[in-house]
Length: 402
Image (cartoon, rainbow, N blue to C red; front, side, top):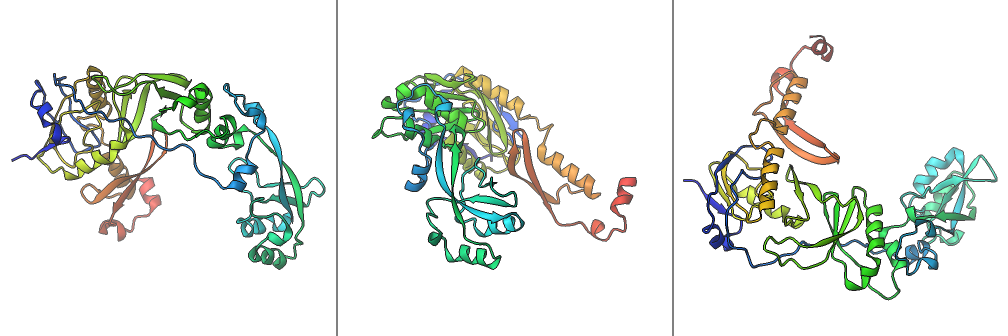
């Protein structure tokens, strides 16, 4: 007998009011759920907003002082990136070029560490030397260098010669919280979280931040690669379909997001459907419970992020009240090739078998390692080396020749 599983058991009363749900088999591949007919259902009264992730990160007082922009940017509401340009003085250690690489490794603990800033610069007085920029929070005088650093210099016969170096900093060298801390009125909380939904950053700005919302949107887009649209929620989630009104703060305004979850790719209109990016672990937990022959009842299927991928052939009954969610669910079924004709795991197995010269079907496991770039995934094939390959006299050149 098939096992019936409910994603939201406490809402089962909503499921029994549905009609015209269609059963669609789910095969062994990264796929969410089957095609369904839009069903009439009573709207759910419980509300749950998306969980935001913190944007700013804490930093030391010394680091904060070093990367504090000019006071003239305070109160800025329209982002002027050129205004965030100033110079600071940092200690620099003069090193011979011939031992530079070796000493840079030994002095890494006290060197200036900031992405986008070169810590080794030219010495204008001598082409045979370079200047290693040091962290002023760690080094203020020759005596403040640690024993390990002093010994590394002495071992190579390098004199401990410190200089002051004038470092030019720009908007590109700042973190988002450093920009906002410099712009917003002193004494006000700058902490603002956002959820990342594909290329969209979703904010819930507090009232005192609203005059700066355009600037905040541009800063978030600048400092978060891949974000091309920043939106702010303008009301609570109180609609029948649990979506909300929003305003575009920065970017192209494209609301069709693409997200990855449990090996699947989904697309949906973020402005017209409900999506909580924190539910992926719950979807994964349900998947782990599935067994061959199970029947999954997803009574709030949304646009398709329900159990995926199924561990084996199973049936899915799904419905959603929102017509827009239903439309994107059908789209995502096609996008993830529910019929199983295009299986990335099978494709990887076939490629590995061809390279090895021995079939690996049923004798290997395949798993996703990570996303190395947009639309580019790294997958790992694990297997015991077949005996016919291990003891084969055929060389790689013979294989290529045939």
